[in-house]
Image 1 (cartoon, rainbow, N blue to C red):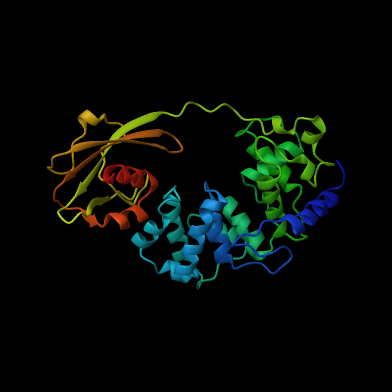
Image 2 (image 1 turned 135 degrees about the vertical axis):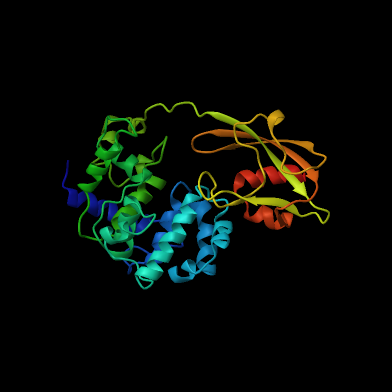
Length: 338
């Protein structure tokens, strides 16, 4: 392979011209952005696309412009603001980390990978990303886009996910002291916009001279992937209960488990057939159809039933509920209101 320094120069030159403009990012070659903004964006972007995360990031930073502001926020407010981003344990970890930075570090993020990794809820990837992008530390930042670039660049024959350690090791061989914050962002942008899944745009890639996948004539063959097991399916019932003023009954879910700590509609266990589900209150229940939702590890069909009644619930205006509920409950509520 040609020298690593030449590969790095080619990609950084490409990034200077073609790097994405993102609300949390500093332009190529400029001073590093606020660590709070880098950390917040990286947490939001885990399991979430850039277009989907962007309005949430803008709303969070407008409402809580510093990590200390976020640390002082109420749990329920942050969980409601997070609704729709999924993986709600991230929101709980977000608060725990913000409070640790505010209370234990004077509102200032640690500036090393090791210091960042010691914060609650911060894993290896996030620690490396913040250290590199916010503090200019040479760090090996490897997300799904970078894995794809490495798999094609080196024609890695081990399928994912078993290939992850090898891909991370290969990415580490390209890390250097020069422009440590721009380097991982350049790799991510290359994977997101050029070295795409399915059909890479090799004619626009600055790394074809080094790419074993391109040399093979079939770069789309990589990364190899192990066939996923079929996703199990579960069923359940969601109840849309309204009081005499039209408000909707919500419940606070247990802190532990899926959608922990979030407000949601009353539901049965998500493995119970509708005929066996016990309603949360006495009412004349009517069936309103069903909704489908897919989580990472299973798919779900919820039968929606509607009724009018009373009880010990968090009674909420339907419009407010639609704007703050996790997606699965928003779907069910929309079905019930229709």
